[in-house]
Image 1 (tube, rainbow, N blue to C red):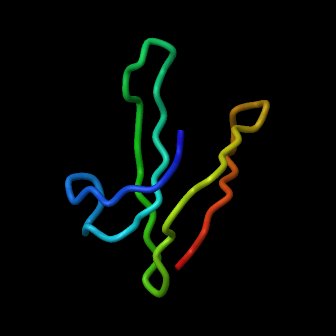
Image 2 (spheres, rainbow, N blue to C red):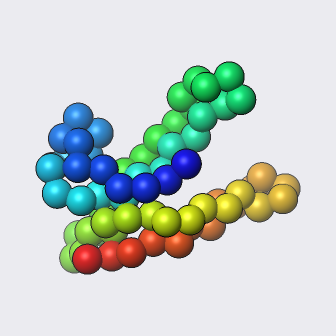
Length: 64
């Protein structure tokens, strides 16, 4: 799943940061990442798709 966070426990500051996390079929956290670019923060991820062979992940995101 993906979206937007303002949590300072997950991202480096309370401003908008995009995130993507993976949860298994049992609801267990597998991995997670917030996204930040030096020039422009990536503020939201509104779509994500895993390739059919599981080798790549495509994200649709919005930068500030």
